[in-house]
Structure formats: structure tokens, C-alpha cells
Image (cartoon, rainbow, N blue to C red; front, top):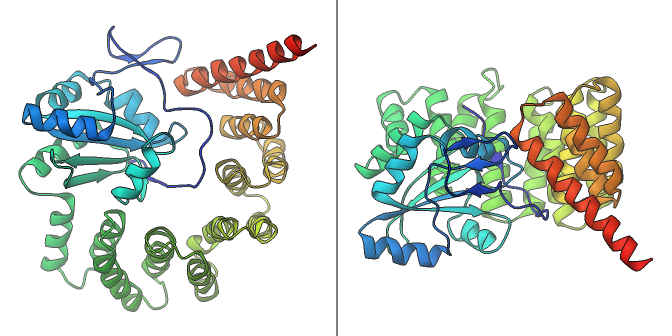
Length: 373
């Protein structure tokens, strides 16, 4: 199962992938998607009204175009006929880009913690259940069946902890699920027990629990960047060799950026890369930070360029080059970079779509320059 993507701050100009009506469901030769799901064309309130009128519930896919597990849902799950049939039978299905239009308000209303989040709502707007993360078609259908029966993934995790109270891994899974479901008090209680039960992080669970507490509970739900920074730094001090401590540099940078302290934010990202100079993934993380947070794209581009020198065949790095060059106003360079990414992964529907996107932006700029000449 793909890991859910933590919700970032800002939004680019690009919407979620185009979904063409009609035709045979699946990814087309040009990278566009024909969905098997009949997505409702309207607002959430309009979808709720339609659901009440039809005696159905509302299924809301909350995601973003750049999110890999969201793209997997679009390309591999929502194109499946059995998924389309199940949603048509019992739901009004709504596709929401959490970063555009009413998306931010919907994400805030339902306290969406990560992308993708799949919400099941009653016609009155009350949440009946949610599924978080990328998944296979069978997993989605099973999850919807459990929610319809009144069960949930959370119920199963709660039962596992009740059956084995000393199982710290089961307790961590429950605490993490509570955090993703925005059940703050329950999450805090379970994560605290995990931290206390693994004081030396010998099982790797205490560091995970501390990271979840800082990111999901304090940074996202409490909206307290200063305290989140303090908790991430406490994690780094207590367990300096844990992988979560390395990741915390990026999360600290994000919270510093929220506070308008971009010099310190970039210093945190630089410290992350310096901790493991040969780690290309950290350079990619630096690039993603600059792109998603719109924070010093020139600095992020330098980190990505260094990564490309180490691994010139990384399509992900070339894609990041394209986005960062776009933010810096270099549309010709952005187009060249996305073409390189597409050449490295010629079967990627996402990169095919992005080539057309950047080509369109470059053409528009050229036309504008010509018109102004």
C-alpha cells in the first residue's frame, strides 16, 4: 500500500488530472484518464442535496494532482468497472482538489490530514467513515462495505489493541489511525503509551509516535508551529539516529516557513542534506519542500541539480526541476526538464500530461511575448 501524503501548504496552478467522460475506462495513449466513476459536476453542498434526494451517501475523494497515491487511484482504481458500479449504486461521487476552489474549506471542515482521504458522508453532511491512503480496488470496495455495515478500519484496530494491550505495534497503528481521522484526544493517549512503552526506541515505535504527535496533532490539528518545532527538535535530540529525526528537518522547515522565517527554514533543509550528503532522496525532499511550500525555489533547484548529477536517470528529479524552473519563470527550461522526465519513464501517464501542461505554458508565454513585441 502506498503511503499517504501529508498535506502541504500552497497550491500550484494545475488541477487534478483531467477525467474524460465517455469512452472505455482506463488511461489513454496520450496519458489522459477515462474514469469508470460518474463524478458529480458540482459543489459538495450540491452533491449532498442530490444524495438526499436519491437516498444515497456522498463519496468524496480529497486529493491533489501531484500526489502519487492520488494519481494511482485515478489511473488504476477509479478506472475499474467494479469500482464505478459500486459507487454508482450507493453514492454521489465527488472529486475534490484540496488545494483549489472549495477544496481547502472542505479539507478544513473534515480535518483532512493526508492525501488521499476518501470520505463517506450522509446526506446531511455528517461523516460516516473515511479511508486514508492509496489502495487496490478490492481494498476500496471492502472498506466501503465495512463503513456501510457500521464497521470501520478503526474498529478493527481498536479490537486488536483490546485483545492484546501489550502489543505496542498494534497500539501505534491505532494511534496513527486516530491521528489521521482527526481524533486528537484518542490519538494523544495511544501515542503517549507507545512512547512510554519504547523508551529507548529499540523497536522504532517511539520515534514514529513522537513524529506523528508533532506533525498530525500539534502542527495540523492545533495549528501551533512553534510547539511543533519544539517537539520535532525534542525527537531529534532524544533519538538522533532515527529516520524520523532526519525527516524532521523538512517538517521543521515547513513550520518555520509558516512563521515567515525562511532563512531558518532553508537552513533546516541544508542541515538535512548535509547529514547524509550521498543520499539523493534528501535532495529530492529538499526540492519537494521548495516546490510545495513555494519557499526559495532557487535553493531547492540547486539541491535537485546536485541530485541529478548523482543520478541523471531519476525522472522524479527532472520533474522537480521542471516545477522549480516554472516557479522561477524559466518556462523553456521547465519544458526541457519535463520532457527529460517523460523520456526516462515513457509509460508514465502523469508525465505525458505534464509535458502537455508545460508545453501549453511555454506556448502561452511565447504568444504573449510575440503579442507584446
